[in-house]
Image (cartoon, rainbow, N blue to C red; front, side):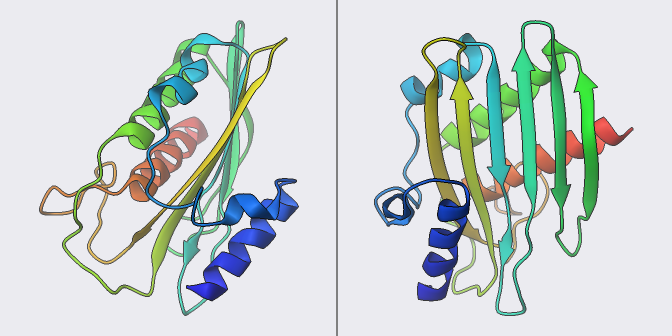
Length: 184
């Protein structure tokens, strides 16, 4: 776990965020408040970056998703380097409605209550670090991170066969689905 937090500190440093934000205080299962996420639906333009790597003893993947939504439309791009879900998408234009749908899905994935997973002790984890900026004049910014063991989680917005839910997996599923749909 210590190796992971060192890696996370590097990720935050590369993203231009203070290393202190990579502490247990910010990173974990704390739910962002609806208030903090309100700007994602109310203050255009919105820019969102989601880093969604998979960490494991076999090596880590690097996957990033970008979404911009403005009054006249949206744009999505990203690169997923997961072993089982590789995807690369150059910036692709979307309608404003499509961009707002993705924002709603991301917000729902971040706010949904997590439940006890049906496994434990996994050495492989989903990670989701979401950064956002909203508004033109008085820009509001936020960052939140989540981690969950991969073990038995499947597609279905982060749910496993028992109906348990992990935010990191739910967020990952939203962005992978958005990238796949934009590729069509």
